[in-house]
Amino acid sequence: MLCLKCDTNPEWIEAVKNNINVTIADHAHCEKKAALTGMNLLNKYPEKTELAFAMSDLVEEEIGHFRDVMKILQKRGVILTPDKGNEYARALFEKIRKNLPERFMDHLLVAGIIEARSCERLQILEKNVDDESLSKFYKTLEASEAGHYMTFVRLANLYFNEEDVKTRLDELADFEGDLVKSLPNLPTMHG
Image (cartoon, rainbow, N blue to C red; front, side, top):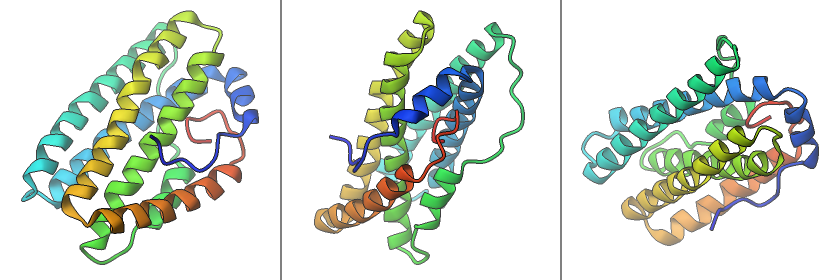
């Protein structure tokens, strides 16, 4: 179902287990940025009605996830510090073509790939964190992230030729797979 071409490096979860609060804080930033992606798409393409409804739902859900992660941080006594950025997402967004309509297709597909990787990472976290309540929380988010991936791909197929979408998704997923293999295994959601 997901377009991922490789699994997360096994060393990633070890870095996370040793720095779980850092990962949770980064997760909060990821949820906030996912909502922002939805808002950016709403702002750039307001005439696309199906997109407007789908992104409205996504923004609400992602902000809800952000709130939930903030509550976890609060319970742990962790204050969210400014976002340091995400090299993984930045590298993927740099692959977006500059001209329309290709830019729109790529924006949808890159957002979908990031959601797919988030789903995979949440599955790993759910199975490997020592905190049972945190494990349950991650399990509840897995289906949501997979659903977001499918929403972005469905929208791309709605607005573009399915073969073109499939070809471009495959190209971007190849790039993402190579990118993941080179990640330094930081204790962040996409580290």
